[in-house]
View 1: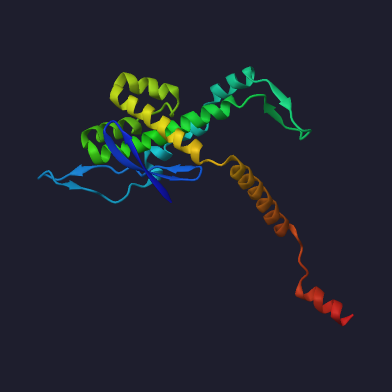
View 2: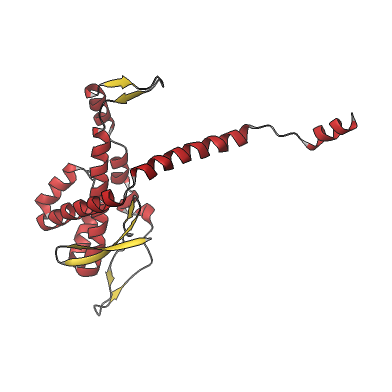
Length: 208
């Protein structure tokens, strides 16, 4: 696992990064005792955090009404005689990439705030917990209205993360990874469907 220092807004935080894979930290809630000493509880289960909540699922799976609108606007062409239909452009992919780097930036900023600014961390954590907009342009637009400094920080961070990703991502490697995975899955399925001769069959053959 490779690491690098991401400096945003005067504070620094380690941003974990591997080839074509930038990972953010888990969400960790803050608690303070009556004498003001900070206690760090066990890791928060991601299944209960905003990372895997309905807003995040909404990001990966657009609402039904949006899907209908996209179908109306979408022009499709057949490719390679494979019987499938594909968009002429990859605007949906580009949009998902931008939204995903917004999501990664949010996680990075949240971890930085946990270390550097606990009050802002608590506010941002609660804000994300009630987020129902996903992590697209609307999310940033609303965050600008609510906390401009945090919105600017997220925007700068996502640009930084994307800049690092395009330097590390090897497109040839990605193509080979997809190809290898396809072959692996087909090989697994082939092995599952092969009917191997049983011991009884072998014994009958030898007896004959």
